[in-house]
Length: 66
Image (cartoon, rainbow, N blue to C red):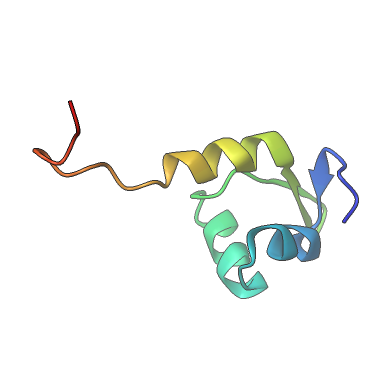
């Protein structure tokens, strides 16, 4: 894969190992950081990486190691 800043939906699907339909829906609902140019979506790799990190579940209370 080419490591450019802006990804197409196909490149993003490959990068995240997710389906295009799911990614389109997340982008259309504003849950996934994206830019729409005409009829095409583009995704900033750095913003996607940050978004992925925010998707991590929080550790349950009492499960943290001290």
